[in-house]
Structures are given as structure tokens and as C-alpha cells.
Image (cartoon, rainbow, N blue to C red; front, side, top):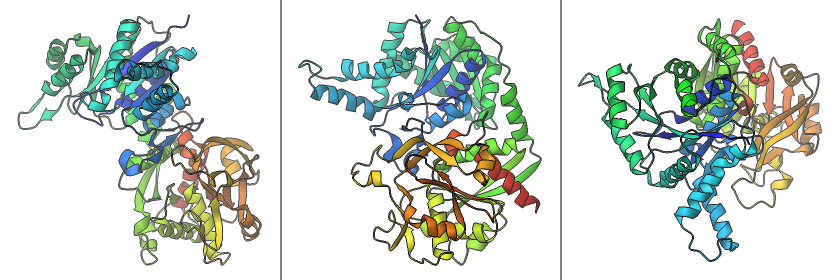
Length: 537
């Protein structure tokens, strides 16, 4: 019998302490010690998934191979562990209640009154254990979103309490991430917020096994002893998590603090091998000691919140390290680009990336950025909507179709070079109904895309409703824009390029979702390489 061990990560005092990074760092260390590990995220909001949320609300919506629209933390999990996540790795309150209500409507509760306990908590426990019951993982780490004390988190904390009792202390433990703030006026670190947070967790019947304390300053042995005494843990179970230069330093910091060692001891597991993190640290070494620098303009309409493009900026870091190059991002709001200022705002860039998005806001600015990149031979990468804008710009300014557009922005445009997908025409619901997940693409050999992938057959993740209108394919190709990537089943154009441009690629899919520390995405690596050539010119 395969007995999966469970580690729960809760957060206290304040949000945004980095539970996802701590969970991913621990998972990385346990993976390095020879265990198969996965991480899942429990989100307390009532949306079924973040797919219908504005990026300003929740940051980027991350998409898995099997088409789940998920929390951006799943991106961190994949980037750290180098293994794909799935539908089962992200659970929301919306999914839980939807499932329970569907069962009630079918009469599965035999006339009973449906309640938070046991029906909602039973469903949460079932979801938590799905990955463990596959037999694929030795350890499942579960990050619980929100902060202890939030009303919406209470059913999750209660479910954890029940599972701790059912599984026993050697099979399930709790790590509580908390904040130890520094008060400049007093000149000292304060433990009281952590004490209150742990007390609140214990009032729900859950006592943490390990405390991970976020801090700006070193935590002394005396403070660790004090926290241990008042929070009912051993001193060696108080782990310091000091502010790091990058998120990729955190696995090393947690290794130095012995987090993985303490976890294994509590789960009564021995280390199969010593973690060496050689490849990981080689990546960090190159990232921190670049030999060159390039500046990339990221043209988007959610640039005020950088988390809206989290996977793209992380893919830049991976590709930059691979090229031993520092990638500096110039954040440019597409709404602010006008014919008068476009040259000034984009001047000096070594590469331009036009980002994904939805709706008509800021569209003309994106088109102007594409035109500037095309006419000035600046390396260009267009992702999803960015690729569609490249097709529109080319159709307008080279083919002379001044009214070329997408039916997403203008329903009855005369030249819809981008059109609603056939499969989307009868769709009325918004949530989870786009073309989602991994789809195949055949790449033409004589192309920049093939040079990057070194393969004719690729699979990439999608998230869109609109597509290249094949009625215009012949005219567009005859004018010089080539479709170098085609979906073999649907005939959908996946990639467009110019042969007579240093590096100009537009892709309908999202390459950023598959970039990891150990496998930087080849398209980003090649894009940064082209930007580096531009810089040297």
C-alpha cells in the first residue's frame, strides 16, 4: 500500500507572505532528496476558477496542460519542480460548493440537511486526497490560500483538522507561515503578531508543527526560543525565512535552515539522497552574474500590476540566465502609446513583446508597437492577442486593408482577419469555455520557430476564443507574412513570422506557461538571443 504523506501550509498575520514560494521551495528540496512531490492550492474565493477574474483582481490566470484555469501559484510550482500540474492541483470554494449542490440536486444525501460540516468539509478532504490516491506521489503539499482568521478559510482549516486526526502525526503535518515584523522605533523584532496568529489557528483546533517566520532581519536564538515556548513548538521547528534577493534563492535558504530535514523527521521519512541543487545553483549563478544586458519593452494593458504577466517575466529570467544576460523589462501601457509618442517610448529597446489580453482597451497602442518593431527591425514576440495584433497591423499597413480588425473588438468589421473560432460561436457561458490547454502544432522547417525548438512537432498551451481567419491566409502569405506553425487537426494558424526580419514571431499559444528553471522555453531563449544581437549592433 502506497501511503502518501501530507504537508499543509497555512499563513498568518498578513497576506502575500509567500506561502506559494515556501511550498515550492520545500517541494524542490524534498524532490532533490529523492521523493516524488506535488503541490496543490486551495483558494477560498467563490469563483469556480480565476478564469473570469480581471488580472487586476488576482494577477495572471495560469493554464495547465489539461485546460485548467488556475491560480498563478501553480506557475511557481511548475517552474520550481519542472513537472506539470493539472485540474486537481487547484481547488476553489466555488468548485467545492458546486460539487456539493450538484449532489444535493441529484438526491445523493438521502434527504439529509446539507451542512458545512460534514458535507462541505468532506468534499474538501476528498479533493485534498485526490492526488495522493493516484499513487504517483510520496508527499502532497497543500497550500491554503488566504490568512488564518478569514471567514472564508474556516472550512478549509476545519478540514485540515479532521485530516490531521484521521491520518495521524506521522502522516500529516502543518507548516504555519507568519510574519515577525521589525519596529524601527523600538529597534527590535516583535513576536506578538505570530503568537496571536498561532493562537487563532489553535482556536480552530489546529496546532502548527513548524513555524516559518518571514523577517527583514536575522532572528536570534532567543527569539526562536521565545516563539517556541509561546507557540507550543520545539526551537528547531522555528525556521527563519529572511527576505531574499530573488525567489530562486529561497530553496537554498530553506536548506540552510533545515526545513526539509525537519519535515522528513516529523513524517518519519529518511533522506534517500543529499540535495545538491547543482543545476539550480548554476542557473542562479548565471542569473546573478550576467555578461550582457538587454532591455525588452513589454507592451500590455495591465502593466500597473506586474503579477498580471508573472509567467512572462519569469520566462525572461530563465531565458536571460540561459544567455548569461540580464533582461530588464520596460513596462509600457498600450493605452499610452500614440502616433506622436510611440517612437520616444520605444526608442532604445532591444526587443518588443506584445502581451496577451482581452477586450478593445489599448488595442491601437499594441498595433503601433507591432508596426514600430516591424519597420525598425527590432526583435518581436507577440503572444496570443499580441500575435493577432501583428496580423492586423500587417493587413492594415502592408496589404492596405485599413479596416482590418478582429471581431472581438469590432463585431461587423469589413475585413475580420481575426475571427471568432467556429467552436466558440454557440458558447454563451464565460467560465472555462475558451480553447484551453495543450494543443499540437506542426512547425515549418525553414523558420525561426523551428530554429528555436529544433522540432517539427510541438505542444503548447492555449487560452483564447478568436483565431487567425484562414480566408485571408493566401493574401497575407503572398505579401510576406508566413504561417510557420499550423495545428494539424484544425488547420488553425498557430505561428506567424517574417523571413526578411531579424526575428519576428507571433504565436497564438502561451509559451511562457511552460518555461521552468531547468527547461527555459526555447522561444524565449531565442528571442533574448536575438535581442542580444540587436544590442550589440
